Amino acid sequence: MKIFARLRFYYAAFVISTVVSIMIVLLYLFPKHKPWILHTFNKVMIFLLGAKIETVGQPDERAQLYLMNHQGIVDIITMEALLDKNLRWAAKRELFEVPWFGLLLKNAEMISIDRQDRRGLIKLMKDVKESLEVMHRPVAIFPEGTRSRDQKLLPFKEGAKFIAEKFGLVVQPVVIVGSKQIVNEHEKTGGSGTIKVIFLPAIDVKKAPEDWYKRLHDDMQAIIDKQLSEHDVSR
Image 1 (cartoon, helix red, strand yellow):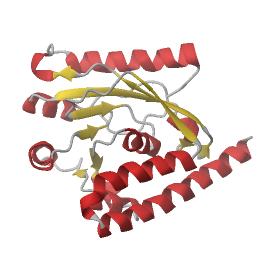
Image 2 (cartoon, rainbow, N blue to C red; image 1 turned 180 degrees about the horizontal axis):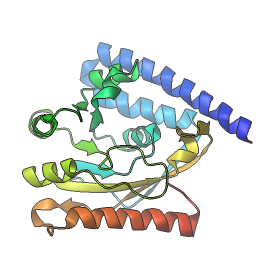
Image 3 (cartoon, helix red, strand yellow; image 1 turned 180 degrees about the vertical axis):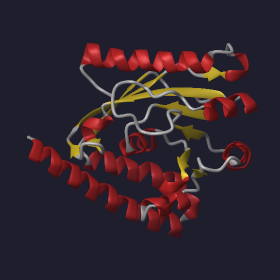
Image 4 (cartoon, rainbow, N blue to C red; image 1 turned 30 degrees about the vertical axis):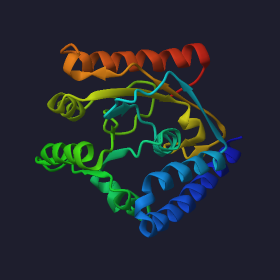
């Protein structure tokens, strides 16, 4: 079983690399069709990876900022396949320097975050403002800031909270479970299965209590724990 899971991981890496390469070329050749290209070819990746997507709840059409837990690249593939929203992802600067994948981020005009630069939050503010007012694209952020290895959510970084409150955004919280079953980047294993995407009620930050961000962390953790205890589905 371990050998099969390892082979599935390398198969998944091949699929992702190949489809990403195709998307890079198409984004360059047909820049006016970026949303369609990203949505369609991420759906293709989900199919080729042997995954299915199950949703609970409904995304709020008013959402300007998506906040979700993070296990690996499959989280991004899943959300892009599921939502035809032309999301603008905020990712650490180092990912923009990764061969192939970095080109995809650049061609898709995603947001680069430099965690070593004190001015990073200022740049993020400018990028979010441009995303919403000029590009008319909702922003997607992993508030944990990095990938968690287990069931516990890492502490949420303050950047997402600051941005949401600064611009008075409508936040769409999302919990994703089951994506590690498809590709586990820590253990280098893979498989087929169902990815469950749970949409929590949207939060209008202008009307939310002061501790909305902490409550969100606790609510998302409770859902993650419930999925494991009642449905045997890990994050």
